[in-house]
Length: 223
Length: 223
Image (cartoon, rainbow over all chains, first blue to last red; front, top):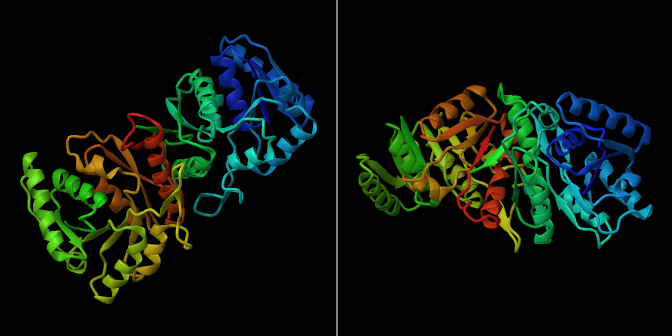
């Protein structure tokens, strides 16, 4: 399968690229607004994977080109840019039936911690769904995975991630995709209208990391 | 120590009463708007504890009387009543330096699941702190523990609960209190202004339970 990770030069994009490259046979393309930067980062990821005895090819190109040839597109884009990115993909006419997965979370910080700040549509995931063409299935996932922990292939994960999608078949596709990542258990949490409760877990995890020694890059499991 | 559980005839009140009675030596008083009902429920809890070889005395009385003699007061009251209850305690002049712990969460449901609906102050925990006299320390805890799982003494917990308080010493007191419950690990999550991210975990857990077989009364752990 062809997997495009847009914003794949950023932290969560890097983490997801490293794990999908390491744990699956999918063809990975890193997308960025800057194609040259994407290409350069793709080579850096290959090198780091090779150091872990994972010999694989990762491509890097601009976001639209990466999405055009993909089956699944992960929008590893900051929340305040993800709407524009989806609109660009639509304008560039590259979206047909790719599955879009949104991991972004709107947050703001104060002296005490991070707080959940969703867009007026209710959640970033729903915001992406509103901006995408109707034919394009949208899911939310990977919101609550710590980027640095993903990117560190020596790190044990043993964490859960929540999946939201309006169509249960779309949710199933994301669950299947995610279950291939070693140590990541995907858990369905219902339709997109439940995304806010999923996304708000991210600032909580960051606050827990801040107030507890030894819980840096903390993840979550449900039991 | 004297522990009052106001609203102790309700689901989460019952669960906390059963576990604190079973796992600690604290003196437990169940409070309710209806003193007779509190007393009747207290006897029922004693009977159920006795069936689990826990011989202990639990008192039941009205909320103000329960709070008056307590060191720690757990406000196991529905979110839309908890403000009035704290005001009644204040008017009845029973609050001096008791530690108030708020486990309530504002939620509303639609066809898809439950959604976090905090009061305009940001969270129920902060709402309680606003209504309480300034001298009274307020913390949030126990939001994300499933009531029925607590109440079932046969059930294994192995779950975490998050603690918020503005004063780290108050947070420490709640952590110490909670650590006595078998299978419950208290985790500080910062000041009261971080309570919204803690409280919003509750509708998420209920949504996860709904969309996943075998995850009824699901809890959370951070790792």
